[in-house]
Image (cartoon, rainbow, N blue to C red; front, side, top):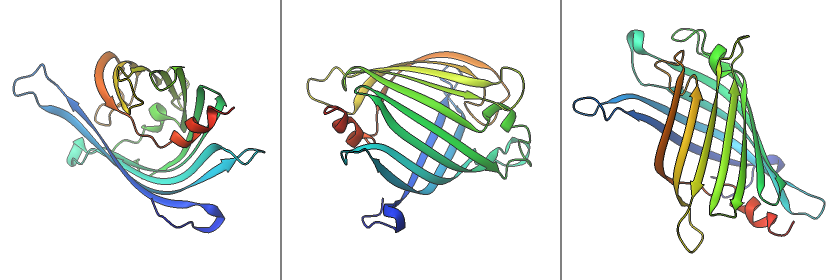
Length: 208
């Protein structure tokens, strides 16, 4: 993130994320698919009547691809806007929408599965210790294409930490790019290091 503000009190930032799907049940334990997601964007804080930060917005250019060629190539670009804000002392809402482009050559019906946006709700059952999340996305088709993902994070550490044990249920389409048309329903457990990008909102909510 840039240290100096841009016009309208915004900040520029770069991010990179990667999803790797590891098949531990096959010989040699191969990675079936890796999706790469670099971004560049600007973000801005929003304030309430008492001059406390209660929301965070961003405008981002994203590229996502699986880095493969020929008939296995999958990629798309999008201009995304996200707004995150507190709904209560322990509840946060994230709304994200996008304008897709550059996807029709390798996956022309991708938008039928990923739609034009998603909503995520996060609730601290126990502040910074036990967190429940649900994310929902609906494809543009008239049927049930889309996805729902629920997660429960638990931190066993005495002091506040960004490390959690996680159990997840995913059901739907387009979790990865290579077989985005395929419906999946999976339960996973794992170890998660959560980013603290909305930590300032969490600190403010203690005073609400």
